[in-house]
Length: 558
Image (cartoon, helix red, strand yellow):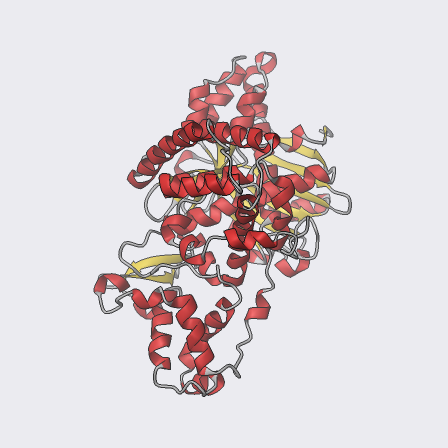
């Protein structure tokens, strides 16, 4: 079902949540992956279009050093993950962005690489930022081993036994990526080159493919090293244990500004999910099949939260609430559905009154799960032509601009920016790594280099400036006199047609938590088991409990 027209479900409009409810930092920081998440979208397409997969090259020695190629072979194109495995000294292993060496490095190649391509890539990809790739490459990434679990599994398989399941579940991945670069970085192909390809047109599809093929590599390399160590005694990893392993990821502040810099895109992500929820809530019946699907989704959520651990006090509190909420949902479903014109809406309204934000967003994901026919087409609506919102409408009157500012940014006017706490944090780009960072305005230098990410403050400043202008004046004249407001005027005009484009919170406030922004974006990726390590970075897992390429249409070339 295509997204384009929402007309087939006009009644859903009566069940949509308002942006004022959805776009708060607290709720965004409680987001859960859904069937609209980008990795789920990719897996559905590859399975539905009968993609084939193989490992066309495996040149890895007894120390685990070498290169490998994994191919995804579609109806029209081939994509190849080129993997380089390294012998990394322990003292050089670091998840920080300033690291210069990793256990493995990768690039996603457009097509099947030749020997010359592999040699060129081997001279550059292991260097990451210090190297350069070409427009034939769609992404570049790196990963480090989860040292203790990686060694445990190698030793166990080499001895002819499966690893301890509790140890596996405590970590959940063999390797974790520390960056997956795409969209023109370091010479990779620009987004415009692949945007019209159906398999890559959705958000972050190339990156998701790269990580998914990397997951296959992580299992292959651990089994390879086990065979080297154990010889004929070595065994393969059991399917259930293998299935439980994902690809870990360490993510910090560098990802957070994305939600602010791409308002039209974020609007479409949010709107697709909200439309999906509204469609489910608007259904006039709950079929036996859908009820069974909801029950399965609840069971999976309970299994997931049993393995989801964190030592961060905020997340620990959230997890306690989530476990209690899932039990409440289970109890409620024993007597649901009751006679109701809209049983799914009844369930949702009960959740809104009863559950924590964490539980409510988990319930959202569960409610979407059995309704693929109803909502999956909305994944086609999550792109955006951001150039369309770049041009400022100079002919707009100041009165019209004020109306949009009041209706869409009234929340910003409620913030007291004369209070020091409201402006304590500022965003800037580090000179060393060219990555976004947060500083303390009152104890650190650099506030004069502040990035325009404090939208609430900029909206407030624009509102103050507009009070001196007549409603009949035009925006062009205003900006000619006060050009510093061009950035915010453009956002206000964009927001008029994109109601879910703005994070409704003060990103300069002393108590703003960047991990809320990170979790929201990662949930759309499909990440699970969010584990904050501070208020500025976290670890997650991708593709846990999902199939591998070797579980689908796999051709064992080597």
